[in-house]
Amino acid sequence: MISDLLARRLQEYGLFAQVTRELGEQRPDYTLGGDLHAVELYDSGDKLFAHLSMTLTLARFRDGEVMWTFSFDERRLVPTVEFAH
Image 1 (cartoon, helix red, strand yellow):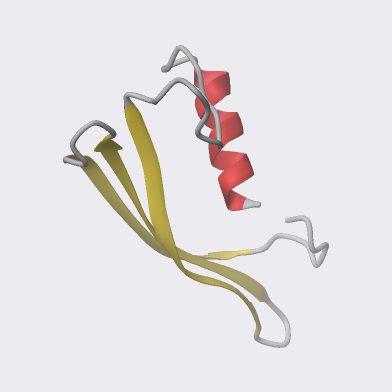
Image 2 (cartoon, helix red, strand yellow; image 1 turned 45 degrees about the vertical axis):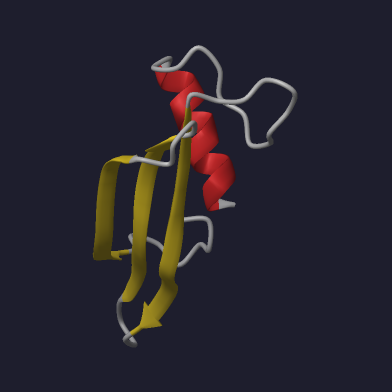
């Protein structure tokens, strides 16, 4: 699900000529990979919190050199009890 969201956002921003989730005949210039450390929902009785922790890495495909790394670890209050939020 997170891979789909990232691919969709990258496509929407138009930063790259093409965004795909599968390797085809044509090799990409860059790959975006990462590690999902946590996706959690905390219910503290009167409040609901979501926790997301992950690391993303952008690497040049031809030699694997890491061009960019971003780590994210945040907990936020969920405004309603609907799971989609």
